[in-house]
Length: 407
Length: 132
Ligand SMILES: Cc1ncc(COP(=O)(O)O)c(C=O)c1O
Image (cartoon, rainbow over all chains, first blue to last red):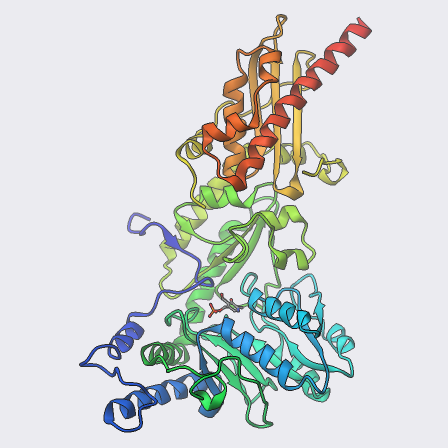
């Protein structure tokens, strides 16, 4: 444990560090000596060479998801990809209908985009997932209407790491002639994505969850059968008119290299990471009154989300100051709201309040995990000694039988 | 969220953690808050014949600021008369701990806790006199 560097980073689902090999490729695209040109410049070698780098990256990203490079549109990240896909398709197909279907446990970048469309006169059905976080396909089928134009369901959930069956959902969408969008920000390098297999029409990607830089992402837009979207960013007509703006060569090259490394290394890497995650789980699961959130089988290998009953999450995070983890999603941890994702799974507020998300990654070591186990165990025990709820539980009092004064 | 020094100190070294016998007629117990809201405070006071708080204990389920507010409160009420203790205001606790606006409710809860403990003690005394 002595050589463990503190604090320990166990928040790879929030973002990852850039892989040094990726950083190197990016640095080669910045200075006068490097590949700094505007990929849209057609009249000189600086532009041609930048364009070449961008097209190589497009190929690398397409390859990881088994798509055609022509189906990749560069964006600034998964937030923008989600906006472009959902607003773009909803607007384009609005003459056909104005009904959308999504899931209550989606990232805010999807939910808030849907809210905006509601303000514009669209109708949105927010499906309740099952208690394990997975969507019930029959519930989905039943929600489809004559005027449904788009289904947006994420691949991997950012909080609980559960993997939705996008192949099965794609079949349902295609049968009903509904466009299917998938937020796959959390998937690359963790779980195989195959656009030849899954009938996904639009798929959002981000670089910074997969050891690439922040501020770059992509949207897969299927060509066969062709899917149309309305541009959200107007200008020079880059990316076949779907997303204008000078391409950020260094960012794009970074994403390409990161996805290339993911393709080469994901099998071996995931095996190692799954072992570390299982080690973490076995070091924690015998603590009394702990609950795993989300399905443990249909789940990415690097995620563990657990609730520690009778311990409040924020104080737990405070006690764990040497390990960087998150309570709920990074975007909501500044507010006092319990995780809406856990609530949608039917978890009590108490359990939602006491949840921690651990996400392991490329640079996590066995020593890191051992250290985490030991500090978590002592923090939970310290906070339970302080907790009146723990005393009541130990005395056999059912906390639900008490009339708490809400405040 | 960044915490103030005093909050951290109380959180790391909480004062007067524990329980007193809730059936003892000289003990007043206040339990406020709700698990669903993310904080529950239990404050207990032991009162002598002269109406002075000789001991105080707490247990708190909640964030660091809630733990610090209750820990500080136990320090403050010890040695005070019930009358003096009932005058403690949440704003004094918030000021002492330099709580940010989003954490003011923790100090409010602490004020509620001492009020609840005092009234529990007074009810018990009234019962006690009736049955005596
Ligand atoms: C599922 C999911 N969708 C979208 C996003 C947003 O991605 P980006 O940061 O690239 O905009 C994230 C990450 O924050 C995410 O986890």
